[in-house]
Length: 117
Image 1 (cartoon, helix red, strand yellow):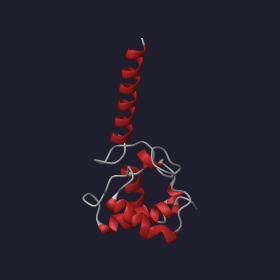
Image 2 (cartoon, rainbow, N blue to C red):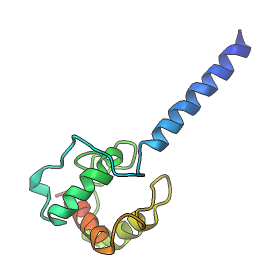
Image 3 (tube, rainbow, N blue to C red):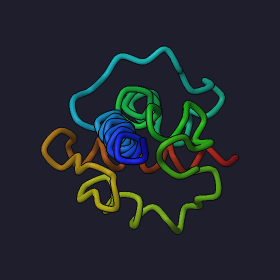
Image 4 (cartoon, helix red, strand yellow):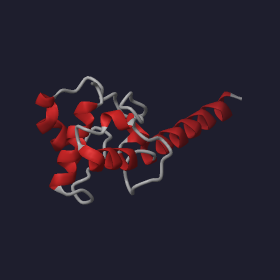
């Protein structure tokens, strides 16, 4: 019986891990979660729209965290690091260098900083 349980447990774990990895990043996805309009001022409407389309599935609609870490404690001094992370990815986060312009990356970073206000 133990010989059957271990492979089944391992298979279930692998399926769950692949589902979590596939759920973050990649092509833009449709999401019903929309950040509050009160927080769109930091990155403007474009930053809010990009965040909703590309980031909220992993970081939560209001930056509270989900698969990805919470973003509500970031400040303006973190903007260069945020831009680098969005551009280059790493640590489970996909790179958006091929899908977002530098201006869009800056808008998302400014929006993210506003999530903690």
